[in-house]
Length: 235
Image (cartoon, rainbow, N blue to C red; front, top):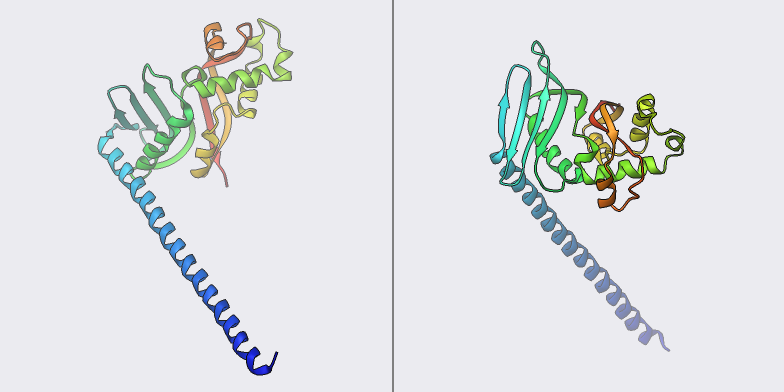
């Protein structure tokens, strides 16, 4: 091949390579543009949902509490924050709901987060404890409770009738096995960590609940009917 024929071919190959690079660059710009539009659409949708929620929330406050209430035809929910009368800082949170439907904590925490964010714009928070309800109120928490104690080697050593002597062990297992998951994830977004569990009014998971969830009815799973969870700053 002569030098005169080789040069045009090299120029042609070079031009093809340049064209391919340009096409790839244009494609990347288009992908970035489409992603940006979709991302903005999601953000706008989330913002609209938040604004819609805000219009439905009723705020009630007294000298010691700030409560956000959200009611529908099938469910009533409230998220309350409490403080001492002579203080401006709210240190305790309590979430309650009333419904005949099956409830999952993971779903409720989405709403808790939204209501919590609304409260943050209105009051000063420095939470030290919270209440969300007890395991029998949430299907997923109850499942976690049953699995945690049915698989615990420590609890298997507890004999029937010795529950009242092992409340602290029960609390330690509930915390270690994260039965209120995904509460820990929500708290992390607020700069908080789970501290300790405090409980009152104890019993066992009813046989019909064990059967409903597909567990052995003979299992003796301890369950508290009042649960407080202390929280602390993550830093």
